[in-house]
Image 1 (cartoon, one colour):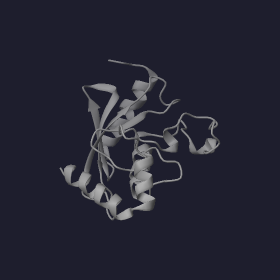
Image 2 (cartoon, helix red, strand yellow):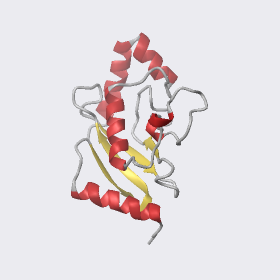
Image 3 (cartoon, one colour):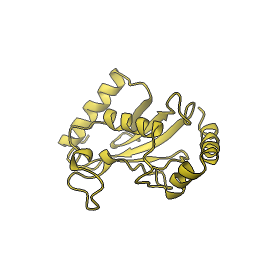
Image 4 (cartoon, one colour):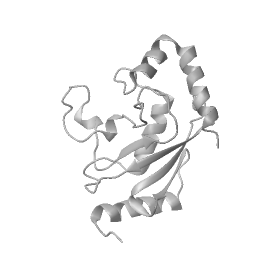
Length: 164
């Protein structure tokens, strides 16, 4: 069993989530690996994603919590802030420090105080209100801005496929 500080912290966060589940998602280990978590995100009410159960994988670096994990949807996802391969692009998952492009303030990026819970709540918030100013998926952002009915239809199709 791993006993590094990051593994101990992750085990503590997992135990807390198991003891006190948070509405909107569930989390557990993938293959008993403390650095690989399987996540189910429930599409938030009153959004286009409502009713969907979206599978994702969260991968933690050994340097956690000094460096952020990666979060990648395994289920299909059509969203301006999710790359076509499923990787989530939100500020708190970007490495700490200054943004070399000048788009994000350092305070918006990863900080060691973030937890699995705060990350997943941020992702649920992202599903509710996409940021199309700095998209990871250019096509989804373009459709969101220029042809919202087509975007809505696209999302409804993935939600139908992601119903538990």
